[in-house]
Image (tube, rainbow, N blue to C red; front, side):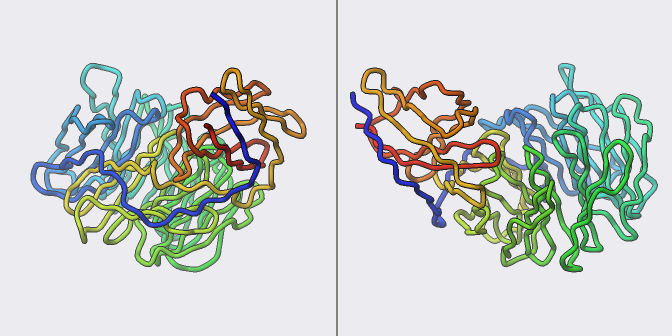
Length: 404
């Protein structure tokens, strides 16, 4: 079988199309809102937190929606508005709206509640584990970010992050900094070890609903209550993108390759290409309900949502994702077809290692891996047209090829 390759650079912008709902389930058996959902580190599990009274934590199999574990928190506690897994999955935690942090050990046959910590504030909204799972950061209505030791429950450091409420906190995957955003409209980066301020992103005074740091630590995403989303370079702090979702945003997440964003908002969740902000998907398991939470599966193309109908649902967006060069400098490379073993031979200017992804022409990810000069095997691909994206060292290039 011959592999014929054309060398045209392409950028594909997705249209707003339907996507597949993989499964859905109720976050609570009493018809409560689903306030929080998040995948674990390898994307195989999903945790949800519900509205109160009789708020519940549920852990699901992310692939099929089977309920693995169900837990009702104490009746003295109110709604669960934030959930988080440690990167290894050994712990998970939830924040209760009146300022209580619940930490669970997940290493046994059944998860065990090991700490219930009262922050002493009137409200808390989100939390995140450090990358090594040893610490957890909590925001609060008093403008203080608190970092606790997971094993002991002891308070390690307090950061006076704002004069008003901090409503979102996210720990960078490399552990170096913590991003916060709150009522004063300013997103800030803090040194995770010292609590020193590293940078402040100021644009408008509109309150911040959510902040996220990208998987490669290079991007900071800021979602405002007024529907605006801003994307910044975490090193140079330059603004990369700004767009409006048309409604209040509650939560955002950015894909591992930094090419798209999902936003939880009134009426539906929406997905947008970066850096253009072009909407290419909208989805919700129940028409007209508010989507409070949305999370992208690590290293995947599924999105989990939680909505005001109490649904926890997972959607597959692989068939509607976009492939774009974005704002990265162009990567120049050539493709040569090997007619013997159906391999793509790549030649770059410098020969430096890269990562590659093969897409269908509709944007579905079909294969990916690391490249350091070796041929890329395409024997498993059917005849047809494909896109090869090469990335590395801040550069990116896309080539179209046809296998026949």
